[in-house]
Length: 184
Image 1 (cartoon, one colour):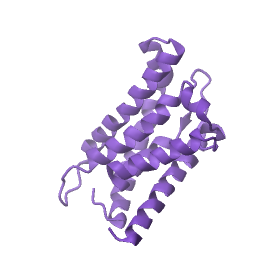
Image 2 (cartoon, helix red, strand yellow):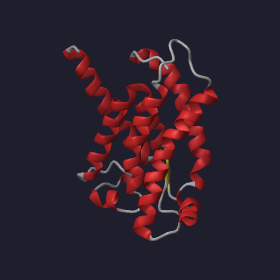
Image 3 (tube, helix red, strand yellow):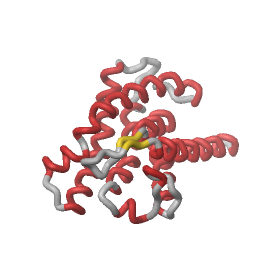
Image 4 (cartoon, one colour):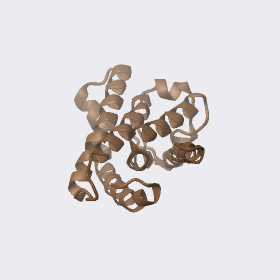
């Protein structure tokens, strides 16, 4: 791998970490849930789909690390280890697994064929499931909330928006991947 290629990869990791921060800032708090609506998962899907499994995960590790050390990259311009240790911290950690799985699932050998939109959507939904599982388990552990209550607070309200983000991500990945040397 040439030095230019390595430098380009590092720039892309930083770009997707920054994009996730910007998408996190665009948030709408819900009065009944500690989890706000934001666009971060769109960026997470794009990172995994465009950078591949390890590159997408690295970009999200950078994002989480920046927030953990106190930079205001999380929702509502927050940051710090307290956010990660709080009720939404599991979802933030879930961004890493979601980016990794997105890259892994979309990066399966497809040749020059693009997967049908529905198949791609199913793969991204499966990747997102890891974020929901980690986040909801952490939320339940911290708050003592039961499974159904946690799902109604932290998962069900977000499903329609996440479906739209999945479709938008797939369309963007298909358009942008040839420019990054990655065919989806």
